[in-house]
Image 1 (tube, helix red, strand yellow):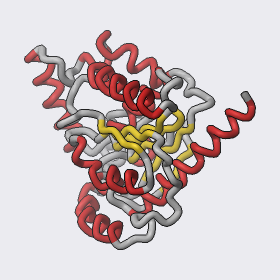
Image 2 (cartoon, helix red, strand yellow):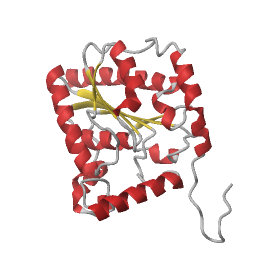
Image 3 (cartoon, rainbow, N blue to C red):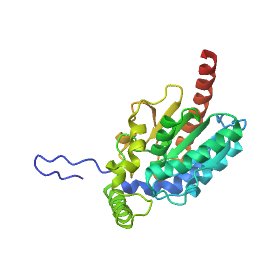
Length: 259
């Protein structure tokens, strides 16, 4: 419970204790029809690039990768061991992998990003709409990257201090206002490409990100019942991702006919 100081409104604190649901979410997913392919559109070799969240690596999206491949999608990881790099530097590396996937499939691809990875996904799609046909974000703080639990904010601050003092090409305080991420920040502010689908998944019981920060005005926002870390292991979220993939295919066909 918040006890605000007189005249000083405090921001809502996400209920981090609800993140303990993750093992139950994973177990329920493995028993679900959607995990066995019910309602999942056939990928027919189309590409999906997956980007993990803050502090996480590609392995955190292994279950979703396996699911997508089982439905005929050609997946590619972001090449991230731990998502703590400078946003601009991280996106440069991911863009190379995005180009390679689009080239190998001969078509624009879908990007699925969890948490901070979803923020990267939006920036990449805004900057390279020629490579992207749709974006799905999982609990991503698109409206404010710092709208997170105070404990996570403290971790960001600590990493930012280490990056600033060490001078290595990692997350630092200059990423918020400095020149290193100026292009990245501009991509997030620019109008989102009209011919790129955009779906943002959010959960009111997200224990890490304030769910209101996921309500990007450019996106079709879909509420799911999931924890933050479990959003890539949650049957409700998988249903929403399957729906997004289907809508991207239909949108792409519509734009092709209009052209």
